Image 1 (cartoon, helix red, strand yellow):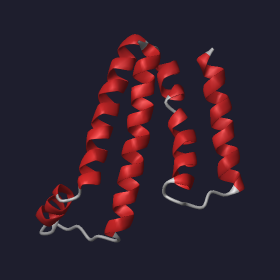
Image 2 (tube, helix red, strand yellow; image 1 turned 135 degrees about the vertical axis):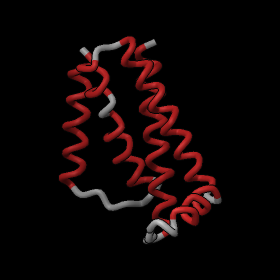
Image 3 (spheres, rainbow, N blue to C red; image 1 turned 90 degrees about the vertical axis):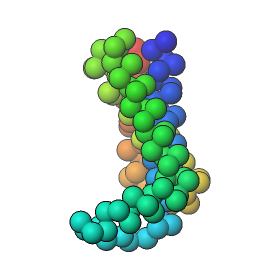
Image 4 (tube, rainbow, N blue to C red; image 1 turned 180 degrees about the vertical axis):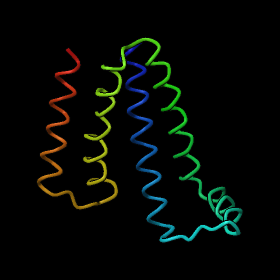
Length: 119
């Protein structure tokens, strides 16, 4: 059950972050002030991918809470760093972002750390 909750959390976090990044790039720079808050909420409601991102992040949050009930914090938080690896790869493949050598090296180091913590 621990591994299932971790997988749900990681997949939903990655999906939420990718969807959110995609939508924010589509929207461009936005200004938000007290009068523009209602307009911002209305714009969010019209963007299906952003709504899906919010849903994914909510699922991730509740999966993390359930994981903390079953696993120690010292396992749950570092293991959730697996999102860094997936997000780096998918940002390159799906969002077509440039990922430099240092970022790839960092993702590999995180992957090694996650594997070490799994034992």
